[in-house]
Image (cartoon, rainbow, N blue to C red; front, side, top):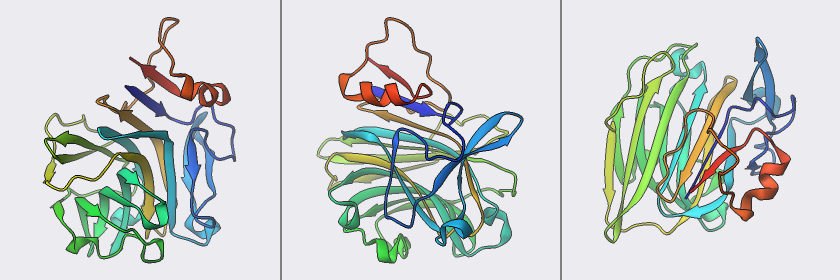
Amino acid sequence: MAKFFTNFQSDPLNAEPAGFTVLNGPHANWLVIDSGGGDKQLLFDPVENSSNYGVLKIGDVESLNQQVFFSANNEDFESGSTRGRFNALLRVSGTFSSASFYNVSVGRISGVNTLSIRKQEGFNFTNAFRNLRGRAGSSLTMSAVSSTDYVNLRADVEVNGTGATVRAKYWLNDTDEPIPWDLEWADSASLPSGHSYFTIENLLEDVKVSGIGQGTNGETAPSAPVATGPNTPINPSITSLLATSARLNWDQG
């Protein structure tokens, strides 16, 4: 079991963050920036990138039971944009250009702020994540989000017999994390184990990310730095990753 969190504080400025793989060529250029007061954030600039789609693979651990947390901001949530979302992708299996996965998203669907769970099979990046509304899953209308709000999302998938249960909840940066899940959806035809991703789509304003967490094999994805000590066992498969960035916090148990 393992968990990971970064708030980018130990990453160098104007560089991609450690611990992630940036995919899809031009859909790159995720940069760590100074957000003021000595704090750092991760920035994706759609204008600078000439693209409003971005894909980050979180670590390199495949699992069946996994959870993702992120906190992100974008003015499109308030601007009246008809679409544009942040996504946590779970159990991404196979080559990404033709992958299957569970997509848990927060953002605009037909001009309405929406939290949704969708099952995507045979992903095609040319069509991005469009037309997911017609796929199996569940959704609900979110509360109002201002241009200064950071939306926090926790997405979870776990084995349920021969199928899987996918859960999601969201909250804003000035509120406490709710205990119950906002959405829960059961899939009787479960997807295989895979990786976790954080992605954006159809967002026209700067995307600012203050933190990303991941939990695998039953661990909860942290929403803050993970406390570690001298007796914290380390998985050899991530030793080199830790060596490249002191700000990666793992707890292996």
